[in-house]
Length: 342
Image (cartoon, rainbow, N blue to C red):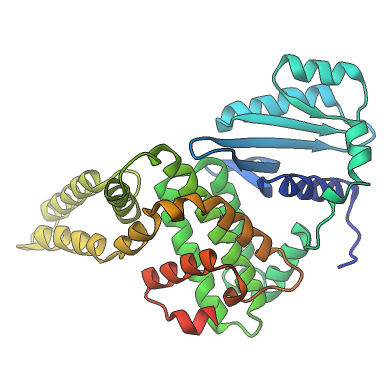
């Protein structure tokens, strides 16, 4: 835990801790991709919940170098905010020139200048008892033997990227697949800790996404929320009607190519059965409750903190609200609660 970080990562960790301390959910180093291209890394991505109706997503650009090029970073951060359709952006720099702050203010970019960065290193808010992102990645690489064991790191990086652009039911369903993979790894890996780190981190991502989706349905009746959630977890963003339409088209296409009586009907029926087999009603029932909705953000922060604790906590040591979520999740997968939670 005494590993020395380079200046850049150290600054990123200090700021990450600062934003965690003041109430944000934070990821570090999310990769923004377009198709197959890696466009850029987002130093920090912040997610805040100021009220039942209001959410805030912010990108933070950090340059703590001899030549920080602060004015150029303001352009960069503002452009990234626009591309990702975020609510704000911040530039953290060791530049102390007043012109930098003034330029940022004119363009609605918050600037944390050199004076702030100097104070940050002395502030208790920049220090938390947790492992760094580098240590987190090292632990999962070691546990999975890199790509040989299922590319745990690649899955984790893809999940962080998803937070930047896919806070939707499609994103939720992708997280559900990844979480199941790592839950299975907790039962088969000699050292369960790295796999549980990933389960906790990905569950936190999942809860943030559900929280973001449900912000628009706070005033809806529980039954309305239940229907919305069931459809989303079962069919994704497109919904039931679109999925059924695609199924009919696929069945008709296959039936037109392969001269086998009844094949088209069989394919359409199988697709319908697969959707019906998803136990979406379990998650829909759990997340439709008002008390659950109100606690999503806090549960996400708790799980994120658990993922980065120096000693990984057992699921049974987490709060009742988080254990309830994990229980519902295990029921959704059809996994034994006692075997995993204990």
